[in-house]
Image 1 (cartoon, rainbow, N blue to C red):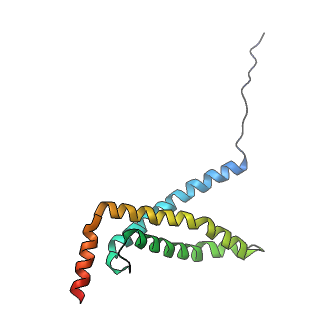
Image 2 (image 1 turned 30 degrees about the vertical axis):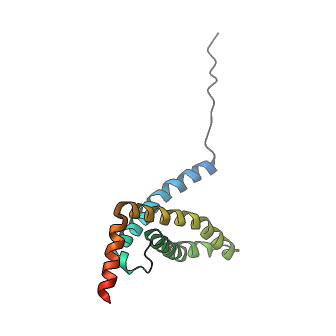
Image 3 (image 1 turned 180 degrees about the vertical axis):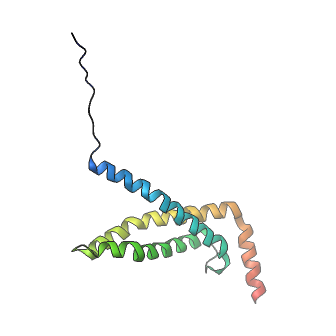
Length: 129
């Protein structure tokens, strides 16, 4: 009796391949956005209107969301018949992602620099007067 192979032949579906490509493609973009937000937060910390680093980074992340929506999502949704629906749907999917990114960057900034940066910004503000 010859050995019968019961090796399953599982092929990934097209949808799972596209999901993997989307995750791999969004990882470098998310890292670049996170780096740029962190850089802007450190560089222009005193020029952002509030004193809380978490709120400052959330403000910066929503500015990045608006820029990304205008530059990336708006042109991609123009080719469809329901452009406004797809634009708003794509933007709403990105709102939680950018909100969490802002909270995490602000929390890490607050944890790394603590109240030292807040004291420096208060000292800088008192010297302007």
